[in-house]
Length: 316
Image (tube, rainbow, N blue to C red; front, side):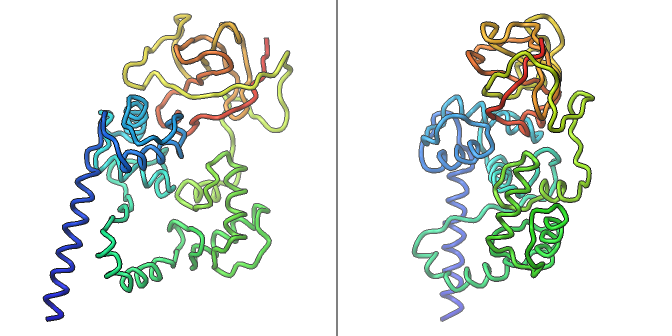
């Protein structure tokens, strides 16, 4: 009798999970609902979508999905299928590094959504599973509340960098997570308090050099005539449909920015902290007022840059 009940319970779980996956397997233009809103929130968290999460799969969402798909080497069709959703969620939770991801790399499976009735029947099992997943080895994703050798490694690395002065007890408590966030912020990363592959890479990189068009940038800035606060986004001629040449006819590559000529005239030389020297050689329909578009050679670099408000230095 117990075996039969277990069988039907597992069958119900499978049916609900499959139904949930299928409903989120092909979100596309015109769709509406909580699944769309969830996808939009993941896109916003990664600076791929500037609009609010309204649950409507409009053109902005399509474009953001295309950019994400292009960055990870997927077919850029703008449709959020099962594979795109899995990667998008993993990227939002810093479980994968989009700048180093290659097709075939391991990607954690998203949690399955089950009905309230089934969920309550699995409370005991869920508790056991959650307890088991609290352990983190070196290289595992580390979050608040986890413990293990990976946390000891994290604490020691943060201590070496001067961000943590507590005991290396192997427990990722609030102090460790706060120190991790401070470290991530200092590296220009999203300070989400989750130690994933990109954070591991930063912790292991002793020098952490900045590539700034062959110039190094520290606390000093070059001689400049004025400073302008701008909203900066990124683009690349590698993106589908974008021209390989700028408005001035030069090659669209790193070291070029698109501006509103009424604010920053074409030909103006600027310095952008964290990027380097650039020349205003391009324009864009959405680049109006105090906005700039910073050119990169790859879509992955654009994704890394995201959208940010920064001060740029006018050299000329």
